[in-house]
Image 1: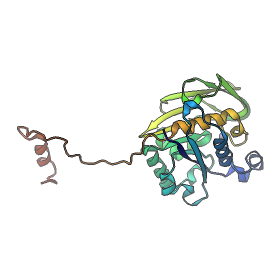
Image 2: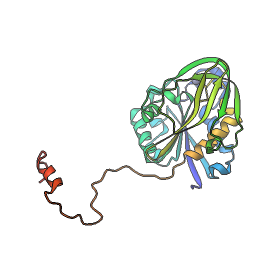
Image 3: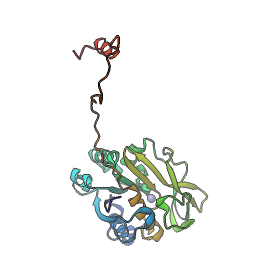
Length: 269
Ligand code: ZN
């Protein structure tokens, strides 16, 4: 297991600068609140004791702060986006996808369900029901043995959040760690895990910008656990090579493979 995990917290960083009410909750931006929580929250035995080295990146930086070199050194990327999904460059999305397939972890938060990178990796619409009505959210831990649930009780509550309701149009999660219940009656798969290529992906629902959700100790615990869970186990750059045989292959009567080549387009002599 790695002793250091390099984390980038990415944020579009729009609401905090445009809406004073949001800026009052996150004066330095959601990304800084999340990053400092990750630095402060101690590791638990269930997720290993690797030290987190946490940096940030935002939409307005060149290449959105996600250059080839920076992503190559990144173990886990945390993603918060909402109103500017369309402004994320497709080349950067492609680069992030490739790094996930190589082994980088990706944590997608809240409205990131509609981000280009999440929809691309899921292959579905990722749509859901929503409502902004200051509702109580009760997050149920349905897989208490999962490392992302370490240190949590049977459930925890957020006094006010945006509602997200089923059906959430995602591929069937490989693990569903949390299910949320909302005051208005809906439920939602709010903590879901997948693997794509060699990388691990975790989607975590809470985190509407108008509420102090990322200041909540249970939410901070989930994020600290998730980053350690998603850390790469391998880093494998993709290739698709012609493979020479390990041992001599006996000649076959009829030479089927060669006949196939000859009967093809004649591109191999
Ligand atoms: Zn929201």
